[in-house]
Length: 96
Image (cartoon, helix red, strand yellow):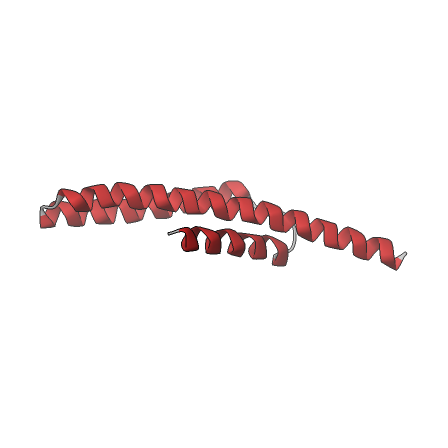
């Protein structure tokens, strides 16, 4: 699973660097939490119909994993915004 977390972090950096301006990290966190809750509910409901406690536990695990991935993505966007700001400040200094 470390590959998924690393990929999410790198994608966050790229997203923060490529998209202009600062990212609304609160909105990103809310969207990530909503996605995690929806996926967890789906798995819990499936677990209730199938009758497996494993599916209920999987729903909780999915929610925790989505929250972790969301936080890693947000940290990546912060670094990407920081890199974007540094590269733009160098461009301004060179052009004067």
